[in-house]
Image (cartoon, rainbow, N blue to C red; front, side, top):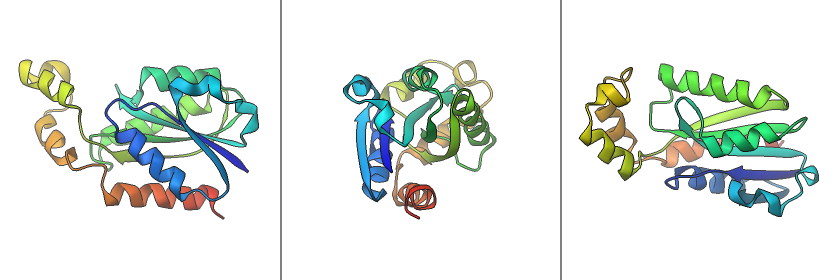
Length: 169
């Protein structure tokens, strides 16, 4: 089995967890940023893992566009977000990513990990009232502070378990 990990990463969080996933996979594997998608023949891969950062409770635009070009592929996702993985927001993100990956493909499994919020976005939050940017997340400041140390070992363990479950049988 040959596996492609293809990721979109704005701040390095998604790249970091995808690189961990790459380390953990046994067998033939390739990892590339989505910007380099034309450098590989997707038909050469049995499995495709798409790494994405969460934007508006779904894959970011670059990852979403790539996923929408795929059809009849065994597809997985690794998503990164600031919110707690036990939050309603994380559940919504997981469900949205599952729907996106299932549209024209054979969705197998996905995993979410936490990641810190970019400095640019944090700066935007200081310039505008949080209820304008994230009106449904009243505790955004706490989420940002909590996420600042992520991804961490607990996130990497989630990634390792996900890879072992799906790829290293």
